[in-house]
Length: 349
Ligand SMILES: Nc1nc2c(c(CN[C@H]3C=C[C@H](O)[C@@H]3O)cn2[C@@H]2O[C@H](COP(=O)(O)O)[C@@H](O)[C@H]2O)c(=O)[nH]1
Image 1: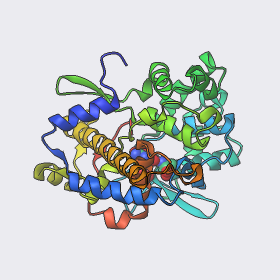
Image 2: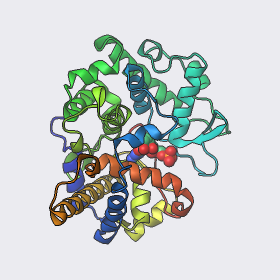
Image 3: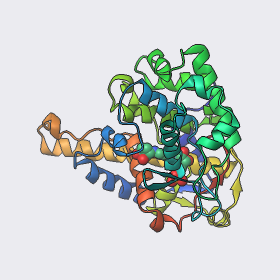
Image 4: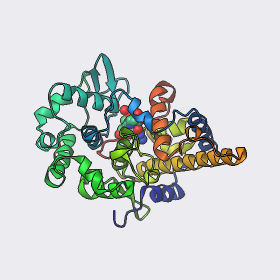
């Protein structure tokens, strides 16, 4: 967007300016080493996305439209008590947080509600939302009215300008992730995750970038998911990656900020401390990605010969760094729970 720092430039600027959130190089190297080792197994690549059972298993237009709706709704699942959250039972499993959103979408589809069809969700009613996104715990899905509003808005744009399919937006971007990012920000207002910080406008664009990352993952970087510049997409600035980065010592909070977090302070979207947590986390992931790239090129130059294609370590971009940390935060939820996440009610992440 015009006059707005891109996520990478925003991350660098916020990191250089921040007074309450700091990057610790020791922790950055620790995470980079863990991911570098993981990347040598050959399983650490774009194919990981589809391994999650709730994600679509096809790579067609329906899958891409599923991803678009999940990205429109991919925000703010946290509740006061982590022990009592919005929960969805689906195929004998209990899902919370982001996975509860996916489970609810799949349950809705199984029940005949066309939640991923723009002609349906562009006119979805609150009664239909309550039915589709009903919780199986006593905690309802947060911000349901907001979710209806952004769904109707997004569906309306697709119907009016893109024949009802997000695949047509992707086609217009002509295999450029940055063109698709610009198009999403231009056409879908709810994705405009921008804040005022230090006299500048900073674009963190969490949902717009995770939309592109998930399209890339869903299609394994092929067909509708093929982007020549996918490595320019940064980490997705949510409320979980910071938790993981602090846990591994890559990020450090000032005592006063840590105290606020421990008091479950409710941050306003766009306030200084909230922007610093998200922006410095983003920059930390850029540094982790750079450190991994240096290790990979050092390995190639030290062995001298080029690896066989199947042995080549797939380039580790910020999306894969992000997914590694996000999935690990889920797997290590208990170990990481002493690190407080920042609470902000909003539609951006
Ligand atoms: N940075 C980042 N943020 C992510 C995701 C995802 C889901 N991605 C999955 C799909 C493929 C990947 O491998 C992941 O398995 C959700 N979120 C955000 O987290 C928050 C919810 O968290 P919790 O309360 O624990 O459910 C909420 O802000 C949501 O917007 C991610 O990947 N990266």
